[in-house]
Length: 239
Ligand code: UDP
Image 1 (cartoon, helix red, strand yellow):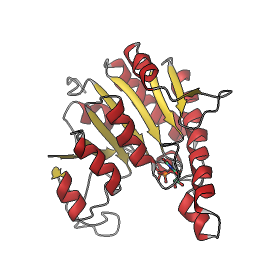
Image 2 (cartoon, protein in one colour):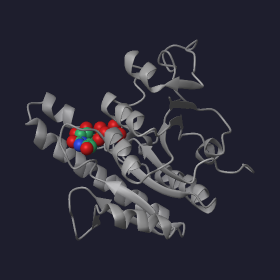
Image 3 (cartoon, helix red, strand yellow):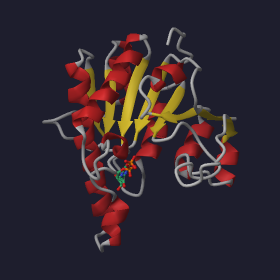
Image 4 (cartoon, helix red, strand yellow):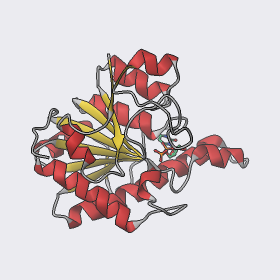
């Protein structure tokens, strides 16, 4: 893209599943590498950037609970999964020469910094990409909510949600070929029609703090930078 970024500081949320590639579980190194390249491109555009990574490719609290585990314990295991993903992405991004810091909501001082809001902002101002690990640090939440929370705390001008498809549709485009993609949606529309962009607490938080949510395909090379410049295909959720 030859465009100009429309946002100065953004948070990118990637689900754990986006790191699986064609695998059924865990991490695909070629996919992790490619996402790291997307991050580098945007970093080189001078945009301040932070990331929240999910853990669904490794462990989900709900699946643990469904098998009889205590829900909170299962959720803590899910949060630890996001730490694994965060370290993998940190490794790949740094290999491309972009400085990063991982900050974990569950302190884990041997492998990451603890989450310290003002320090995270300082890192971004210095051109470091900050990766927020362990979600919110609380069970019963999701990494989508963590993304909306950190985007609010970091005063991000937008939250980018990288998914498998290029926006929000009125039905699952994988199953329903004639599904219609929205260019633009209101927060309240997403909530009342339960459109499944992100969970309700994440959308509510973004709405209260007036942070636009841009849903785009992280599977499409170059899309992150394009959407940041207002080009390409995506859905924007705002007022
Ligand atoms: N999780 C949690 N609190 C948080 C964030 C995540 O308990 O603030 C747990 C929860 O069990 C969740 C798992 O971590 O299922 C992985 O996160 P998520 O499902 O949001 O990952 P994604 O779907 O984005 O891969």
